[in-house]
Image (cartoon, rainbow, N blue to C red):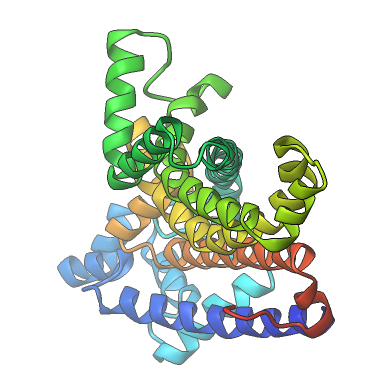
Length: 323
């Protein structure tokens, strides 16, 4: 198990370097930056005037952001500051550290993602058990039909439909803003419903396979009931394939919060990231992107650890077939 964890940590370090390099070069490939766009128009004086600061302070900003330095110096400064938690200042808000902007908005985004994953996993397990217990019945067919429909509809379409039904027609839930837990309901459902459709099918197929396995048939032959068999024998083994696919869904969900936050007007990190990208705010783009990547990798590591708990082969060998 220790070897398994060390291997995953090594993969995380390599992935972090790749993500940081790709983000940096894509960011630099866009024409100009927040400061350079103003400098190209009228020089230091015009840029300073647009930001309401003195030309001397503008020169200091250029040196602080290393805009006059080679690319590798700029790249290393972003990565080093992020790793050491000495994040710089936003170009759009020169008096506000990026760490403060992220700290104010990130809890909303991560809370939205975590709650959505929790809702999706619990609902998927319940629907998968319901369908597997009544294999090939109308309950099985109808449950899987709804699950397939939920998978086919994108999250932003689900968000619009939920906002129209519960926010406009019924007026039972708020649609725009963030002033309490009830403002989370529609965004969470918008993100969770497509994932529920996918995960519930995995759960149903995995549980059916477990119920037809030899050791479960033996339990049935000894007089075990369906509820006891599922709860004590089949459910744990059925969760292994489900946990395996949760990791990629978490990654997609983290990036999906950007669009959902915009639709529901949530003041999360997605809004900050979108504004930073449109205004070429280099420090904020790098810091928010690297933070997203680290969180996604940590969640995938957590999924791998849960996988190891469910599958004894991981604990013994640090490797499982198909991983």
